[in-house]
Image (cartoon, rainbow, N blue to C red; front, side, top):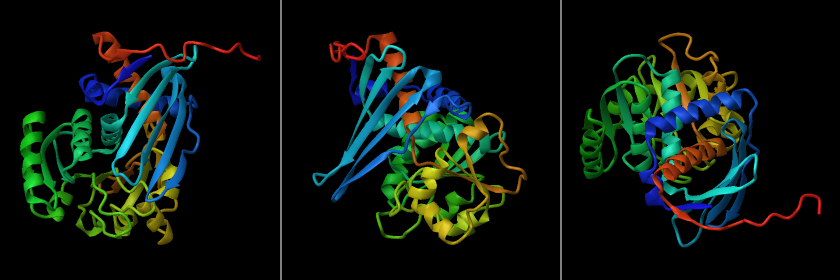
Length: 327
């Protein structure tokens, strides 16, 4: 069993390879090769304990992610990766950065399937870690000419713009209003605007016709990113887990309550195998992510393979004894 720390995960990860691996993973899901039961959510006031198991037959792996937030604050993530055939525990990985990276890679898959062709401007709302990884995922999937980034904190958005311009080799400019970022053809929303506040980061009347909205927050009923008008104006809402998103995302729960979501939902897996996407160039389309074990396990498998190739990580003799089957 290989143990990989957060630093070792970061050193073993390439975003372009992760986008490709996840695109393949969604094709496997569309063909019935993935088992993803509902995730287990337990309240641990004032936080939570969550378990996400799965089997990805195409990648030959199975496993889980478990994470929690408790009174002491912060979120801890652990991913366990098993070989589907032998049952061997291949690795345990710190999932903190990997969770942000796999979310960004899935957004990259969505951008490639829904976004416009050719050099395009991206508007980004948010300046934290997931804003970084989601922008990297988009840039790995489509050709980006320039980026406009908004965060309510002036210094943060300026530091973010300078850092990402150097990392990505493209123009990244801070802007002083969310509306300016939201006017771009591709809009990435990577911020939770506050638990239970009802505040949103993106309003539908800010969007231009034909916009592609990539939204990765609002993964709990009390979290919001998009107002109802974003969904009302959209022709298509794509999710990595449509039923789960409809029941857990505050954005989609609000849209459902307003009666503007019916008939619009599609899965990312459907699109990955050629399902219908945007039908009219003027249509607004939305990708809403809530995260799945498919993303965790495919990402963990990619990182595990890279770490093995470079001798990264620490070996442990864990779970080496098997009880005979049937005994």
